[in-house]
Structure formats: C-alpha cells, structure tokens
Amino acid sequence: MGVYKMYLNKVLHMIEYIKGELIELTPAQAIVEAMGVGYCLNISLNTYAAIQGKSEIKLFVHEAIVTGGRDDSYTLYGFATKQERELYRLLITVSGVGANSARMILSAMAPTELCNVISAGDDKMLKTVKGIGAKTAQRIIVDLHDKIVSSGITQELPVGLNAVSSVNTGVKDEAVGALTMLGFAPAASAKAVVEILKTQPSLPVEQVVKLALQQIK
Image (cartoon, rainbow, N blue to C red; front, side):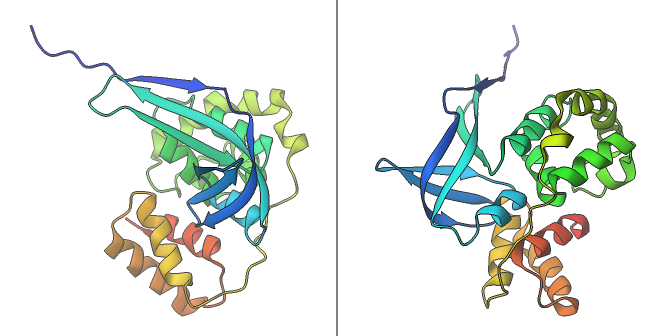
C-alpha cells in the first residue's frame, strides 16, 4: 500500500484584527506589538504603503493553517482594510492561486485596480504578475467577476493607497529583501531592482517591488 499524503488547508477566523504599536516593517512583513505580544503578519505592498511611517496601526487579519504534511504551519496575514482582506480571501478560493500568489497579486496592483481588471476581464494584466499564467488569469476572472460585483467591494474601496515615503539609501536592500521573502532568488531580485533604480531612482520601495514583480523571470 502506497504512502498517502493529504494537505488540509483551513481558514480560521478567531482574530478579526490586531491593533498596536508597529515595531518593525518591511514591504513583506509587519511586526505589531499588542498587549505585550509581538505578532508577525505577512502583508502586501498596498498595506505596506498604507501603514508606513505610522507608530500605531490596525491590521485586519486572515489566519491560515496548513496541516497533514511533514511540517504544519500557522500564518497570519494583515491588511490595512477589510476590503483588501476580502479580495485576498476571494483570490485564494480560485484553483491555482495560493497564499503567496494572492499576496503577490495584491502587491502588483492596488485593490481598486484589481477589481477593475477582473471586472473588465483583462487577463493580460493579470498575467503580468509573476506566477500567474494564462489559465489561472482566466480562472480568476471567471470565478471572481460576479462575486466582486455582488460583494460590493468596488463601492467600498478607497480611491487608492499611495506611499508617502521618500527614497532612502536602503531602498535597494529593502526591495531585494522583500522580493526574496516572496520567494525569488536574491541574484535575480537584485538585478531587477538595480535596473529599475537606474532609470527611476526616486521610486519608493513598494513601487520598485511592483515593477520588479513584472520583470523577474
């Protein structure tokens, strides 16, 4: 009898949000201290832009647990708005879109832009996101078009989330670090980031990462 492996993905909803002091922040993660406990949350570039420069923040939480494999995992994802979290939860219901792919999509596009892309059936724009092929892009549009319209997310989304940071000397390292945390090779990440900064040296970190996500092969 062969070895049978089953990986069970569950979504838990025990924590609605975490509100506290922002201790550390990178384009991919935020550490928030609340009541003496430090929570590490994976975030998108849109959330990064929304909370950058703040000392006290509130992140809406998505809890994910993976069990049944060799290594169980429990991960927290944080979002600046309920609407972005709802988009994330819709994305991970699509076959072929995992947790990291969903976060990457929300890092490559603002929530309003993503809603417009799906509503318009623009699979070409979705395919610019690293790891999203033609079939997955079409599946996202087919599966989520009606759900996004009926959920009312488009009416509730803010006009945009823009970073208000100025470029600093660590922008290259921070961008490369974020891409590495998203699963890309450091060498390829560094090459893409350097090329972007050569032509657009004043870009903030999140914009550099967004452009790099479209270029890394």
